[in-house]
Image 1 (cartoon, rainbow, N blue to C red):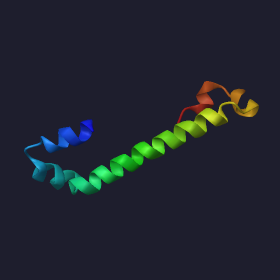
Image 2 (cartoon, helix red, strand yellow):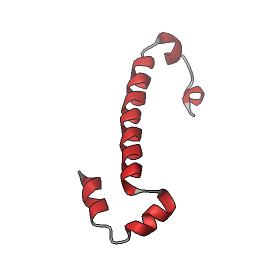
Image 3 (spheres, rainbow, N blue to C red):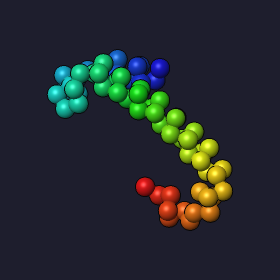
Image 4 (spheres, rainbow, N blue to C red):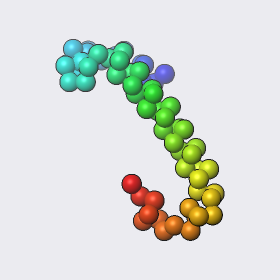
Length: 63
């Protein structure tokens, strides 16, 4: 909701679209990214309970 309010208040949509593409397409990609992030974080949480993964040092988990 906040993003919708923010993007609706922009005066210079043409400049945004010049650099990042059409706003509706960009919003769709943004929302997909958020959805995927939640899925990835859930997988990480589940995998972190695995004994083999729990034994890894933190440096092995940083991407």
